[in-house]
Length: 399
Ligand code: NAI
Figure 1 (cartoon, rainbow, N blue to C red):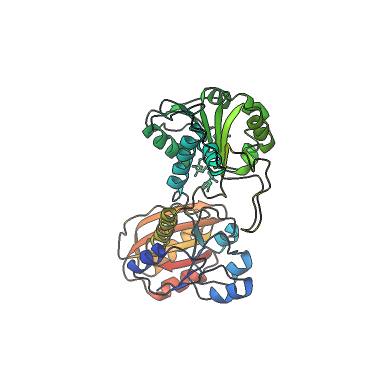
Figure 2 (spheres, rainbow, N blue to C red; figure 1 turned 90 degrees about the horizontal axis):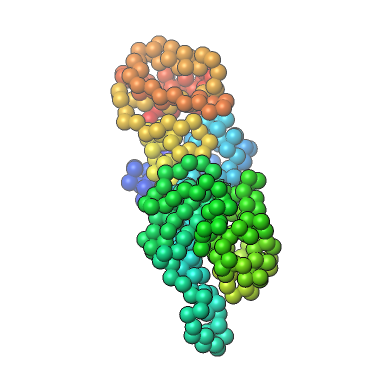
């Protein structure tokens, strides 16, 4: 039975999934551990569960030959050396969708609050003023929401916004299936020119750096609102600051920043601090109790499906083979170097031991091939030992 070691206070929903799948040896650590202690803590583990603070480098992976899989109970996976994991036949999983809804709800909430100028009004009442007026306050109903990046989160925002009566437009660099009555717009500028609220849901990186800048902000409707809960680098903050000061934009909500504080004790350095028509939040768009629980369940289920059936769909580094019902009497998971003859080697070892392959699913990714073989017959430990010692083999398991 696999030994599972979890770090960084992973939600108990993960343990529930492991236990109900029959895994009892689950060791949990409340925090990330320093390198020396970490090395000790993961010895002998087949499965690791981490969040963003545990670094798993090539050396750690090489030093733990029992390790079969790593679950990143979060979205990001750059804390793991994914190439080294692949080279050692260690599949890595994450939770790309579990916090989608949390981000989408925050964005819709912010759109409604900013359309009503609530951040300013809240601030004024706290200061002792009673500015009872309808000036500049609008309903969300009938307003146009422009979504830039219509992927998992963007499309979910659109669905929620329609429930509030908003018209939804979106712009994406790839063709996307519109949800509800949402309408695609072929150019960013055309989308900006029509939207009362613009919300950004594109990935970070070079291609989207300063996508929203002085020129694109100028294309936005006077009095529009900008929301960014994607990546801080997508917005040129100085250009946004000027547009808010001049009144060209009525308000903004930002959850992400080009440079974010590294710890709780550090303050955000931004010209937007102190502006009453700007909502600033500390990158918590996806941080809710529900998303933590969903992440615990989503990643643990992927790990169990890999351990018990070899399924790697959704793995961030491995060749992807979807879940398949077992055919035959046993299943052999074989990770090999992606070289000519690897499949032949596997087949002949299996045939030499009197086993008949009844179903087989192969996928390759770069230097690695991964094949699930369902066989008929009794698979003795010697077959697995012969396969493990074969020069093409990276890893071999019987499940
Ligand atoms: P996704 O990959 O499902 O969707 C991104 C979409 O943007 C794709 O459809 C892609 O084709 C499109 N896109 C890429 N470049 C574009 C461009 N230049 N113009 C228009 N569309 C473009 O990603 P998902 O899961 O929806 O996440 C979106 C963003 O939200 C990411 O940056 C992610 O890091 C961020 N995020 C922020 C969180 C928070 O706590 N604030 C939590 C989770 C994700």
